[in-house]
Image (cartoon, rainbow, N blue to C red; front, side, top):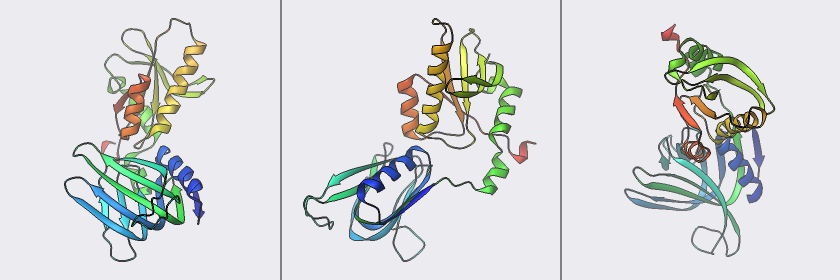
Length: 253
């Protein structure tokens, strides 16, 4: 997607935030301090390290030696990024100097990894596709065909009426009705998704609410293998729904 060399803290913050929201692989290289709080606590003083954030929620901190990270967080964590001001402490940032702070945390068990960059060499965000995964997991078209062949995979009584149904916000993947006759908008994604997919589904629902009869009740359902924690919270806030479903694999054919 995008890379920056020796970026400002503000530019790196914007790139990392966009990458997290887009479900990209995010990398940051620079001088940083690392704190972990959870089942135990640990601190790494200032040093040049490589931080990688993956869209499955995992985070890894590497040095220039060895294959194992010096600290890490498992999948299903929530990534966040912010700018803060240094206090002149041991992490190398002088009082009043800006720092890029990246945090990866989860609630069960409760633990967090905080990486504070006082200087930056690189920041990047990449939309990676593993061709091996692509061949096994299929495409969004495969997922759509699966939903059309077995609508009850979305929910019992769901009836697809159209695909690529146009709206002012774009084309809806699958447009249909539930068993009670309510309009249903289904957005399909073949991989784990983040806030961007929730926003897309919300725009379709908003568009149809404007375009259809004022009393029409419209439900939005996001169908994907999994969603990030932030995306799940956004779905709940918007009154949207999620169904976990994967495209057919080669073994299903």
